[in-house]
Amino acid sequence: MSDHIRHLNERRSFLTNGGGAERNEKQHKKGKLTARERIAYLLDEDSFSELQPFAKSRMPECQNAPGDGVVTGYGTIDGRPVYLFAHDFTVLGGTLGETHAEKIAAVMDLAAKNKTPIIGLNDSGGARIQEGVVSLNGYGHIFRRNVLYSGVIPQISVILGPCAGGAVYSPALTDFVFMAEQTSHMFITGPKVIEQVTGERIDAESLGGAGIHNVISGNAHYSARTEKEALSAVKTLLSYLPHGRQTALPVKKEDIRPLLNTLVPADSSKPYDVLQVIKELADDGTFFDIQPYFAKNIAVGFLKLGRRTVGFVANQPKHLAGSLTIDAADKASRFIRFCDAFHIPLLTIADVPGFLPGLQQEHAGIIRHGAKLLYAFAEAAVPKVTLIIRKAYGGAYVAMNSKGLGADLVFAWPNAEIAVMGAEGAASILYRRDIQASDDPEKMKREKKAIYEKENAGPYKAAACGMVDDIIRPEDSRKKLIQAFDMLAHKEEERPKKKHGNIPL
Image (cartoon, rainbow, N blue to C red; front, side):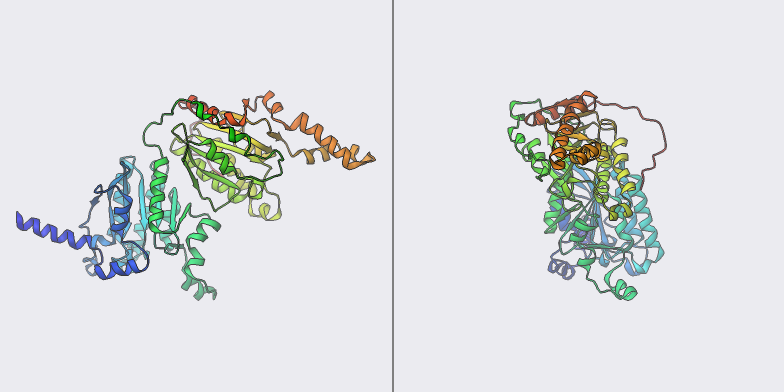
């Protein structure tokens, strides 16, 4: 038996060394960790159990490649079970072949059977050219599972190296994508091919670096300075995803937050940072901003209210006055659908002047993209609470989880302005003749604007019509929200039976 054990230990030592000391050192010189170092950093100490370490390629020239270039298995993060796979760039460049794909598919299947999150650590040269179309078929198996298990288990991708060609579609199909600056890149067509085909010269960072996908394309949700920072952010995200039934703490005196009375300017044209409002509503230190650099005019993410995880969608007046745009609608819609899929209640914080006007937005399809937001909110069956903290105008008011769209409860602050349009525009239309006939049109316009604000734009008319459930003091908002989500915790809602809806993609 001792000979067998010695042989096993030798084989394991070979496998765990990846591509060998020289290639591991080369990985380090690029500022990157090895696959196993990443796993060790991400998981709780000594919790990793590897799966299929002895799997080999069916191609003779690739049979000495440890694990066929991918490490798969399971472990825990802060005691929570997770499954994962990590491309090993030191082995065949982490390229995907038939066996490599089978290992990833197998660990995804196990994660789904056990209703456990799956995390992919991506660092791959793409399809293995030596294996030809078989490697492409492997991608198909992975993509299919990404779709099958969407809404069944949380799927998280961490880009820690190259991710090019067809390989990019697996991360794109997952729920959250994390990237590390300088070392991670995603693109369909690489810089060399682009130059050959179009003559355009561009480097990998400008084409598909972390900055591009977090700021411009919106393909990523989090940008980290280092690999370790990216992996730590994944741990933080997981701490917000419910694991079992959520329970909230009873409301306490400390849940009165007087600072909320001062955070929103009385002048509705003045900007402010809605994240300060959200942080004041949340349990101390519990706030996670998703896609903070993309579509900055809307904020989405997670907070804790009385220990309960809640997803938030909030207009951000610091950017474009918080108006809704194509990118904002896309960002919010996808987040809302994630929360609905995993039974996470939704808090909407509305301060919206409307959809952003302009030729570019209209031609690019704001009607279709804006409809996604309406669809996502109306489709969501989780507890939905809206807090109107200032402006709520026109179709954008409806889109931000209004009562008519399906909000369970709507609260408004006493300064809220809920109307078809802003008071100035409405007064100009409704009282146009009076203003034109006046000896002092500007004075008349101001007077009519004040009348409109008093009679139509405040929260009381909406409350009288049942579109607002209560008008509350800002300082009471946290207490009211904790109570609301507690009372909605057992919400059940009958929906028409159907195969699936047809969201306006």
